[in-house]
Picture (cartoon, rainbow, N blue to C red):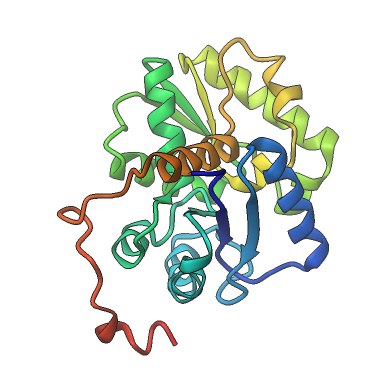
Length: 240
């Protein structure tokens, strides 16, 4: 097949056309497959708590069901992978969660990893996700940048915090590093920060998009024994 079309679907409310276009440009710089970036545009303004993560998942289902016929694969635009299991039950195209894709890559590249998260309040969420992925044993720790989301747009503040926390995680024994937030990936500080670190710093945006493209191109799809096909008649009000 030709290059597969990928939908990068972000839960929560959209910040505006300019930011959507910026993120779409960044995503298309990462992979040769064409990527469309879209927000659900309902639910929370962002995902920085478990309740927001759960709330955001319902909006993903209806938009994903509407867009499925136009794309060959879907990437969830949040590192918490909200709605991952439900989306795989609902859709017949590959669905990729950035945390699942990135953390599994981390433990293939090294025997330990550190998880970097932007906020103190998301540390527990990150530990919980590592446990769900059955990869807690290799996790050296979850490290917070302790940055307000607004600071993610300030290059100097982000790069300094990112570099300092990455070095701390590496000193503690993390042999690869996972940036646990897609806003970090879209901030485009990866190459600058990675050059200062003694261990690999993974790019969750590139990894999740490449996995989606590879699965679509090779016809790889999730098992219906693990993810039984959803009965859409029972989901009528959810998918309206």
